[in-house]
Structure formats: C-alpha cells, structure tokens
Image (cartoon, rainbow, N blue to C red):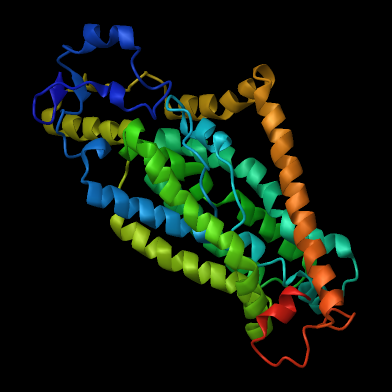
Length: 366
C-alpha cells in the first residue's frame, strides 16, 4: 500500500464518508495492495490529525459565516452520512440575511408603490423556495469536487445575488434574486460535513454547539439591525450590509480554509503520485471506479429515494414547512401590529416619525 510515510492506518474513523469507502469486511483484504493510497496514522494531510487550534479556528469562522447566511444543524447528523443527507438532516434558524428584510418589507412596498401585502410575506419567505433546491446542488457537487471549491463558489454567488437585490429596480426582480439567494448559502449544507471531516464523533457535539450559537444570536439582533439600517440608510442597505459582511468573512475563509474532504484529498494525492512515479495503477482507498458524473448523479437521486422509502423524511419536511410558514407570517404580522399599536409610522407605510434619524425601532414597527 502506498502512503505518505509507508505506514498503514484504519480509515474507518472517518465516518463522514458514505458510498465511497471500502466495506469493513474487505478492509483487511485490500490493506496490503501495493497500489492503494491511504493516509498514515499521523498523516499531516488527514483533517482528523490537524491541530486543535486550527480545527477550532475553522469552526469559529464557520459559525461567523452562519450569522450572515445560514445556521448549521442544531445537533450532529448521523455519522455514516453523505454530505447531501447531512444537509437534509440540518435544521436552520433565522439569521441576519433572512430577518433583516422583515422590518424593511413595508418600506420596500412603499418604494415600489405596491399595496399588495402578499409581497410583504413573499419578501421574507421566498428565501425558502431557493433553499429547497440549493442543498441538492451544493451537496451533490461537494462529493466529487470537495468542500472547498463548492463553498467558495456558493459564497461568491450569495454575495452577487445580495448585490443584485440591493440594486433591484422592481419587486419581481427583488423577489427573483432573493429566491436565488436562498439557493446559495453553503453553511447550512456544508458546515456539518466540514465539522465531521475534522472532528472524531466524540468531539463533534461541542463543535456543532459552537457553530449553532451565532445563528441564534442572528435571530435576536437581526430585526433590530434591519430596522436601524432601513431607517438610517434605506432598505437597500439591508442587502448591502449582508453582502459586505459575507464578503469580508469570505476573504478570511479563502486565506485560512483548506480542503477537509478526505476523499478529495486522497484523490489529489493519487494524481500527484501518478505524475511523480508514472504508476497509473495507483488508486485511492475511497476509489469506487465511478466517474464524476456518476458520483454526482448518485448524490442527487439519493434523497429522493429516502423521500420515497423512509416515511420519517416527508413527516419532518412537512413539519419544517409548517414552522417556516408560521415564522414568515409571524414576522410580517409583528411588523404590522407594532406599526399600528405604537403609532410610530403613518398608514401609508412611509418610514417617518418624530423619533429622528437612527430610531431603528420605528422601522421594525413599520
């Protein structure tokens, strides 16, 4: 077996990989293959062997990203689970990018001279329409290509679509780009797999908890920030702010984050060794012989199989849809109720009052 230092190791501690590993019963039979490339027990390229300082730095960075775009799962996903299934397992909470728009919704309607209050609900909830399709694509791409390129590409798209929302010239344009924003957040889809890549299962609970906390903070401070920003700078700055903050975190992420997916790391190592040794028979421990298109196709159809043959999946999906619907309706209802109860905004939804500039609470009540 070919490895970085010549030693053999048990790859079964990496439980974040499914359908790419050799069955456990076949491990001994293949462990002595001379052309098999694997990690050493103390291999520095194995994410499980990275320093605790680096692992927790990445975890905190993921948590910071979650405040802006998405929050990861409330508890660790099942250990033997592909990245797509982990994204389905993940539960999300409201955060800045979602709820900052809620207090600005009446102001947006007024700006575009619309009296259709259905738009007010759609401005908050249409994010979830994109979120239906996004995880399928992001997680499926991460299995053949790895976490790193997919994470960066999705974050850049999130920034671009946020800018497009800020520059929208009509309500349909704004709604369209806001739904596209919902497709792109990588944190809800890839944060849990990245944690599973770096931490053994005994340590994942603490890491997931740290990653979850900032999302809860976003739920609390999001409406206040959105209200203040809308009042002081206008509704477009709720989207500009999300784009700017996400761009800043992405720059830091681009500098410090490196690939964590063990399948991708070993695949790159095999390609490098083939060039160095001219031995085309070398293969990764996780090599199943499937082409990239096959891996992508299998990852895409797997959740539909679970939806058809596992009753708990549609039940949880219906529950999540109900919760999100109540959340969106509550956000809009609270906005309108506070507007009339506090009397801080005239009935025409204009963001004006005697409180003066910077009075964020009056726009949350707008």
